[in-house]
Each structure stands twice: as C-alpha cells, then as structure tokens.
Amino acid sequence: MKMKSVFVVLFAMCLISVMNVQGQIYFSTSFSEAEGYTNGPVMGQPAGSDAVWQDGASVPSELYAYIENEALVMYQNGDDQDTWVFIEFPNQNSGVMTVTWDWQYVGPEDSNIDVGVCISDKFNFEFDGNPLLGWPEQSAMTRMQQDSAVIDARNGDWSGGGTYDAFEAFSYTDGVKIYMRCEIALDPADQTYSVYAQKEGGDEVQLAENFGFRREYIDGLNTVSIWVDGSAAETRTIIDNIVISGPTPVTDWALY
Image (cartoon, rainbow, N blue to C red; front, top):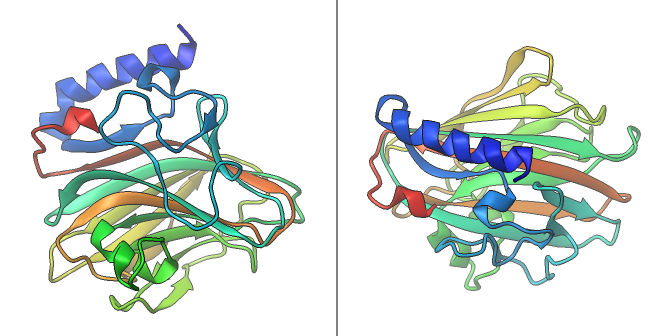
C-alpha cells in the first residue's frame, strides 16, 4: 500500500474517533487509491461511492480535470474554454462550515491560471434554465485569478453579482503549495464567508472577512464545484486534501 494510502486510512480512523469533539465531517478527500481514485478523468470517481464527481459544463472535462498521482489536476492550455466539475455532500444550512484544501500552481512564474473552488447550492445550477454550471450560480467562491496572478474571493450581493476582492495581494505563481481555509456562516439570515491562505512554511493571512455569497442558497449548501477557464498559456493547478466540516450531524456521513 502506498504511503499516502496508509496515511489516508489512519487519518480517517482519527476523524471517526474525534468527530464528536471537533465537529462533523461532511466531506473529505485526498484523491487517493484507498478512496477508489485512479489516474484519469475525475468524472465518475471515486469508484464505489454514492457521491462522485460530475461534469458540469458544455466543454467535456476529460482533458481539463483529471486525477494524477493521487491529486486533482485542473489544466488549461490556452483554448479559451471553461470547464466545471462538481461533487455533492449532505445539505447544510445552519451554524458555521469550515472548508480546507491545498492547491499549487504549476506553470511559468510569468504566466497565470483562472481556477476556482466554490461551495454552492446545486438547486442554483439551473437558475438560468439549464443544468450547466456558471459563475453567477455559485455561493462562496475563491480563485487563483489571471489579471494580477493573486488569490481572491467573490464579495457577492446574494443575487449573482458582486466583485472579487482580497485584503492583500497574495501571489501564487512561485509554485509554493498554499493551504486554504474558508469559514462559511450558513444561517439563512447570514450567508457570508471569510477566507484565509497560508503558503507552505509561512504564516496564515486573512484575505476576506464576511464576504457575501454570490448567490444565496435555496435550501442549503451541498456541492463543491471547481472550474478552470482555459484562457491563458499551458498551466495547471494541483488541488488536494479537501475537507468540509461543521456542527450538524450527518447520519450517513461516511458515504461522502
């Protein structure tokens, strides 16, 4: 068994033993073989799970979102096409949800990428009358953006609008792994989130505080959706270790 697979099994055992103390785990993946992931397109993975990654765009994601070396790779090659993939987790609509992941840019330091991680309500994916995913249909949105090659978040107006912003210019093109933390206030009257980033070997910094959802949820938040927009040179972002946790018990949480 590979070292990462051993780690995943041990980590899962630890989560089970402490979940009542540290909060319920709604979703957790390190894209490992132990979870049923194999190299190739991420759609339909992991094998044997009730919750699998799905294609959310008119541009097929086979070449743009794939598993390689037990991590998710979001790839763009300058063809100006956007691709979306998403996976569901148990619906949540109260308390505070914590979302963590790490990502790492792979490409020339003088280039960039447009890739984002969103926590959203699947019901909103058909807001415009079709099931294809779009940016105005998402809720809490964090991205590696192209214009100035920094990480920022969408400060939304809960109706599909708003603007991207960040408290400081947090660059990513040096290729250092970055640990992300997003704290999401789920209560219906709130629906805001704060974002933190930490480069490997560095200190955590706050990039956003109480930003509004781009679109408010209908019943709750229940999907992780990830996009890559292929409008730059050939670049990649490696995404790994996504964990979503919070206070609400989920009876069948192990399925996710």
